[in-house]
Image (cartoon, rainbow, N blue to C red; front, side):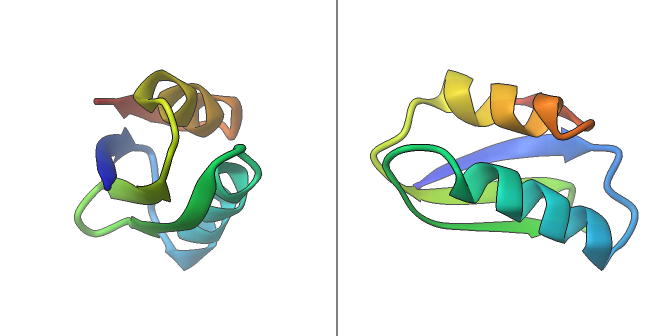
Length: 64
């Protein structure tokens, strides 16, 4: 499991945007985001840098 910090999420719609972006990464078995905690979690064989890049491409700031 990989968990990263995400800045800029303010609602469940933001969570959906992040989850959808992460779900497109190869190797991702499941993904979730929590705007209140400011985190996103990915299950599967995926590189943390790819997770951060996908979140940033979706318009949010991310850090491992």
